[in-house]
Length: 397
Ligand SMILES: [Zn+2]
Image (tube, rainbow, N blue to C red; front, side):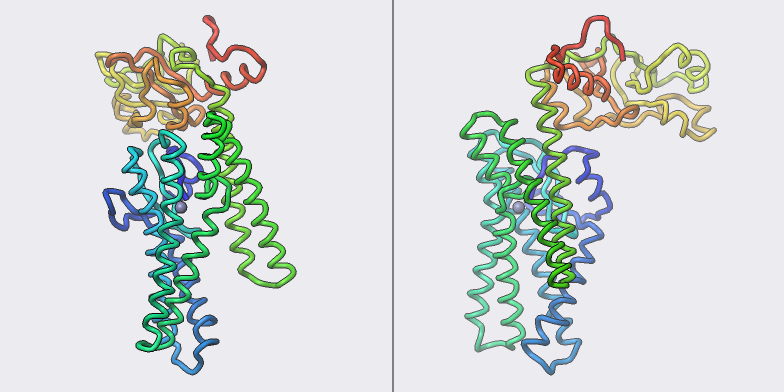
């Protein structure tokens, strides 16, 4: 599974509580705390039901040891699936931000989009192919060592193989953000030549599949009385949400069409000076302004950060006796844009929380304009009404 990096997006936000677990092919791998639950669930399942029913009479410690090793190997094979996506993505010139392993598997965050459908297809298929290869190898190994090792080991290998094959097949379900959804997207994109319509199609399909999994899980819980249906419902819920976010993004970018940053930015930008005293700003300057968020600039009008009224109101009394620059938040790279950039491209990378963030338009080195969340909503609402999305000359937010 993979998604494009959108700082502050639902997925990125959900996976924030994770710790670094290593680096492979230059990509940072993180483990989310919920991964521990997956580990315990799988090890528990193996050692209390799978292994004892097939090979009775062993000690609990023996079952748990083998179960835990099998669970760790399974998590490693999920990591291998994601690394396979990364290797092909990097080869095709798409940088990878990070890989996160969590409760429902793995997620690779790509820092851009594949250049063409062929590349997207390659990146998408790499993961399931890796899982399939691991699955087949484990099953062959299980048969190969059948007479040499303890049957419990053989059974665990066979389980690992089957689990990887199921992982491969499940990921190929044709709905975003699953790998099969990316395959569908590549196919639709190739046929129509329109990336955004293809994205909407793949996301709609993802919503349907998510809903299907929720229903399937509910049926399993109610009719069969099986708790594992809950897990299926959770997975369906996550997929449906992630697909909805992608659908929203696609329709927003569709409406933005060919507009550039210059078409919608507010200019000249109302800026705050980093070396101004907070108290003077609040008493003398702020009453004359109706904006909520500002780029903070140095004395040469170069951006040094972003500052919102909320940042000022949350400052400690000590900070309030200092300079505005100390309160400003760092301006993330995707929020620093150029007048000629396509609006759809820059908004795909940056997330603007109303009243908190803005895109700072930089020409040369100097701040020439800003774009807020309100500006983007205005573009969408105007185009929905059949009006040009371009900012009218006299408009203000
Ligand atoms: Zn995948």
